Length: 256
Image 1 (tube, rainbow, N blue to C red):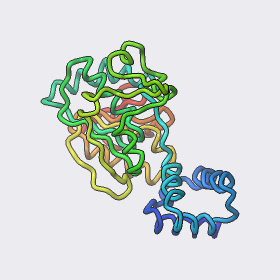
Image 2 (image 1 turned 120 degrees about the vertical axis):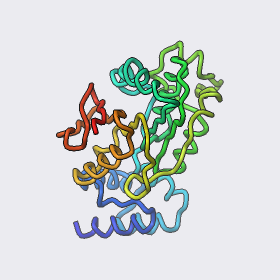
Image 3 (image 1 turned 60 degrees about the vertical axis):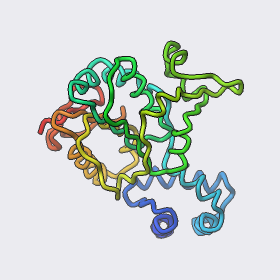
Image 4 (image 1 turned 135 degrees about the vertical axis):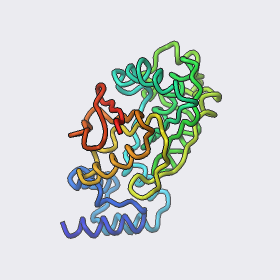
């Protein structure tokens, strides 16, 4: 345990990632899997490799920040977004939407596609992540077949181009609608006045104390009656205490 506490300090110093905010058991398991995969013997050897090998450091950062996603992930949630959330927030002038922990951009591009289909014009489609390298992949908009598996054929035909190598490239007009920025949920300033914020499958890795702090920050960033959407394993306990009301599966609305 002492070695892991030292590792957390070393990773914070080397990568700027504060592992004290994450659940120890889950994060230790991930790190141990990485060490075994790369035939490293100790935490100290891992840190030494991170300090001297830039390529290893960037791959480890991407692995540690858990960048997995695909288009229209969890169709029940996207049905609510399409049928209820977007029509309501579109009543405001050019709604502002934020995808936090955006990873490869599949979530925010899915939102952009739905808005284009409904002919809604966003004021801002913001996608943020701690990992700049994964944001570069999001900006490129190139996806593997498994990453677009949740996309219906009509959207594929209309908004994607399939390349000879089997990759799918999202349409340039969709890419241009999204702003990608590096953002640390634990340390960076939160922008305000959003009509919709999505932060899905991120909270489950944080301690309960950190989750409470992040939820409070997100609610403060919402406009009155704005929507907040979490992952399927991230039910908010006592949403009223945050000024939220549960309106559907994974979907909450600001009441204050």
